[in-house]
Image 1: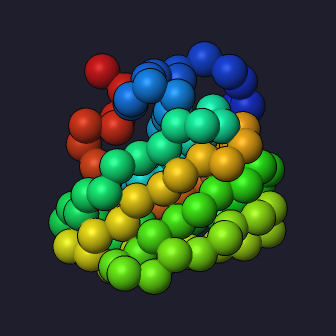
Image 2: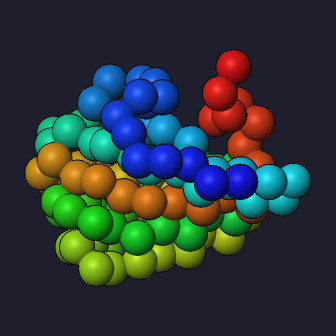
Length: 108
């Protein structure tokens, strides 16, 4: 699958956080996230392994009980079923991979 660049396909997940699925196959999903400063993702866990890369902005990212300052060029990996949360310090763009595919993130 090849996906061409474009701004269509973003959907709001929660206030201040939009996501667009980029490419996917049977076991892997690649997404682009746009996050507004002052917002974030509340503490949660899920069955997916989640790896990401920050393109721009600044985040505070908690994985399990450890907080991290995340700046452009930093990356992360969250194992399945591990509590994590994100505070968006400034407008940010990240790319993330989910394994297995998060069906609820796929286009309708």
